[in-house]
Image (cartoon, rainbow, N blue to C red; front, top):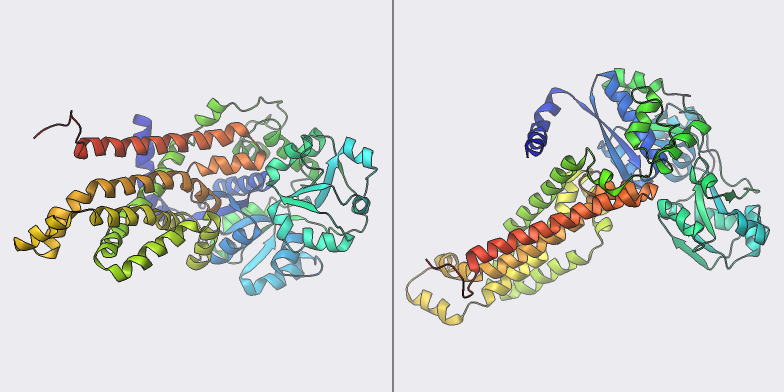
Length: 505
């Protein structure tokens, strides 16, 4: 309890601390290498002592990171020259850094600090399967159009990804599906798919004995790892910028592969690998054989209380907004028959919008990432059960009681407050309970836009296919959902129980 109180106090004091020292916001994508580079950048900034650093882990794909960078929600994130050229600028080739920066300048952005390694896309198969089919080059795949391909969603849709590759090699595959990069290796090893997309520095290529197919048409260009940042960052945080510049050329390809392996194969955490590289932590983090992360060790990690508080804030804030706006809307739906269809229909339509689609829309509309768009999204999802139950509860009040109240001279407001709302309270509370339980589960999606909560563990677990870490995020969310339901059940029994053992005044 004492530890919880300390963490709560720290959370409440965060705004005051933020006023005392500026914050450099670092982003990363949802794969191991990006997590590690983001941690290295964040720890480098923190060590410079000029500002606090905050690493927004696994924000999403290139489009979300780019949008966050342009809006100022983050200051920098690790990117690749090929992605900048093809995906962000729509070029036909990868120019040198000066040319890239000339084209990025109108957007207020710049690319710099080449880390020292490249990481290009490639396609890979199990060695045994590739030998069986005599496949060594990408062009050999054209002879086997019935092979099953599982490609990451980003690779499936980016300009320099699958659409252009398919056209260049004239592929005619009939079974191409999207699969998260962190899960693709296990699907390939299990024989569920035949071909996946990989990064050239992936540690699991050796572990699963995969054959990386030769790009005989030289379709994939160089993807040199760099830092993509806002141009004003250099002047705004000169000491932090100078510290980050010293990272240039320090990470070789083999070293990056070793760091990826430390996380994916040895169970090391992203921060520990970053600190080991920077010499700020145990130096054996990359060489130690490591033990598989257990569920209990992942569950009781040092971030448990922080994630719990963040999750509670997301749920409580969105639910409070839902009650504040949903109950009046339900009253309006009951009182104004013409508006009932539009109110209930609108709330129903909001409930059908996919979570990630709504979050992406809110990021674009608000021009920011983090808690605000997540809270608004959760609030919108909470409206339907609250509005519908409010309208239903009020509609269930007997007409005779309303007529009696009117005959007694009560105004509409007094009749609503003293008679109708108390009689409908149990139904309204049931709607609020449903909204709260739904929001606990839906809030895990908020981690995709840097809003924190238990979803951080789930997203990180997906990135490295760590089932223990996945469960360490999913189980607390399920427990919180049960706790919320039991709390509302207790309130219902305390105030509305009408059974034979109910308390009498």
